Figure 1: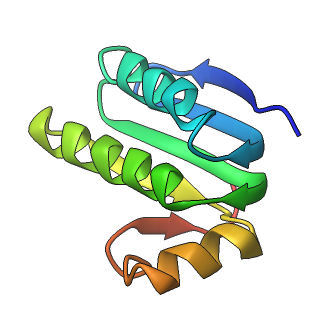
Figure 2: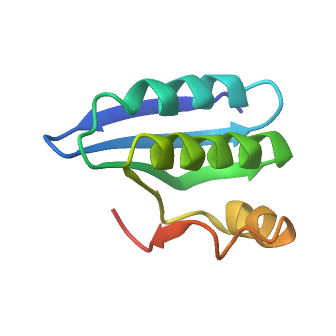
Length: 105
């Protein structure tokens, strides 16, 4: 399944909506989307993961990099409605308590 990424912006927030599979081959695309959203958001970058069917460790590493970048730029970084597949891999990596998670967008 191909990865589909859309970005919407308001004055304070950039929301990246992700649909598909985030793996070794597609995670660079997500990384680019997250890092490009940082300057556009004055307060927060959020990643909607409700449409992600599969995520591997490279996807998790991409989210961690986004969190680090947000902290460096003094912005908040959150995950919106992570799918069960995403929650599973975050728990396996013991990162489910590291990210701020919103149940809905």
